[in-house]
Length: 219
Ligand SMILES: C[S@@+](CC[C@H](N)C(=O)[O-])C[C@H]1O[C@@H](n2cnc3c(N)ncnc32)[C@H](O)[C@@H]1O
Image (cartoon, rainbow, N blue to C red):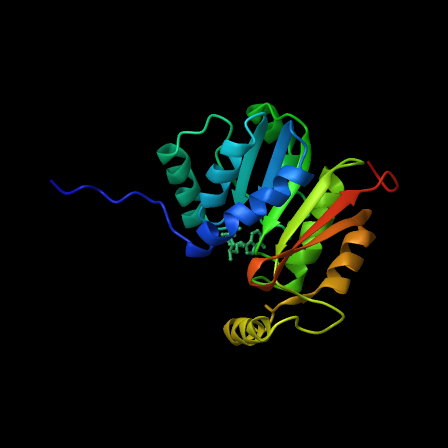
């Protein structure tokens, strides 16, 4: 008998980085409400983190159809009753799916209290980072958390030779991609009413960057 292959995809980095990321998420994310994950990729992170945030609802999203199929397959394989089916979401859209009443009513969503975005802003154009900040600013209310993970330049400089090589590789793939300068990301976040709360040094020269939505600006 031929066993049909399921749609699960594997990103080996997720197995390496998920424990260190979880350690930070447990410190910075609220313990109830909906966690919106932007650019969930394969869905391996979603099922892993959701199983550690049992009192939260985990809402994965991705722009890519095949990856959304992979997320569904992972949630079917690791049965998790606190993970929603993934939504199609391109951060550059002026209105995200989760802002549409028809969607929020259908999902019966608890308030979105945090947004998690891992390894996206360097593997997409700068407009994706700006879109992420704008959407997070529209969706999160005062005190809401925006968590980013990935490699960053600091003070305009790479922090490791491996990050410089990765940056060159990314730009070779797409001229609009590349390791972002942390100051630029912080400025983009500030423009959408986020305060930089904490930076954590992570393995393999990555950072966890945590922002909090301030009370000023539209709510
Ligand atoms: C390197 S993968 C990271 C996936 C996952 N977060 C992880 O750490 O394994 C980059 C992800 O960003 C997503 N992405 C790229 N551009 C995007 C956009 N404009 N809006 C939303 N997601 C986007 C891709 O589809 C892909 O899933």
